[in-house]
Length: 150
Image 1 (cartoon, rainbow, N blue to C red):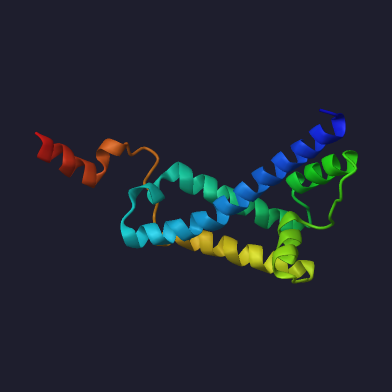
Image 2 (cartoon, one colour):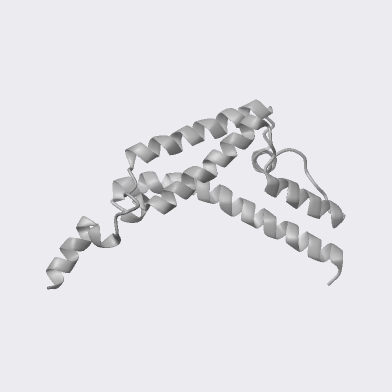
């Protein structure tokens, strides 16, 4: 396999990773809210919730500072070295444009990211995560199951 093909594959791997992070952020909030209604205990996992909040916080801070995500920069650098087509702007704005044929000024994305970040913070209070020190044995539902098993 030649160098250009390897660079293209590396760029694709970064793109897939980037898409997975975006899906984690967006679907994470949706699943947290559904989980509240459905009584799913895993949506209260403090590590999941902390990682979810940290991920959107990074996105919001990057947008406020006018910084393009490093994943986008790395992907574009690899595509350029592989002599592939590159795009301008942020990953999300590019793909929103591609998927919806919508062009918006950067401030629209800053406001959107900030509003979504606010929803994630609101979900922290609406669907409180378990404390970090709580083990799974301290879950009320598990105590009932263990009690019935005796």
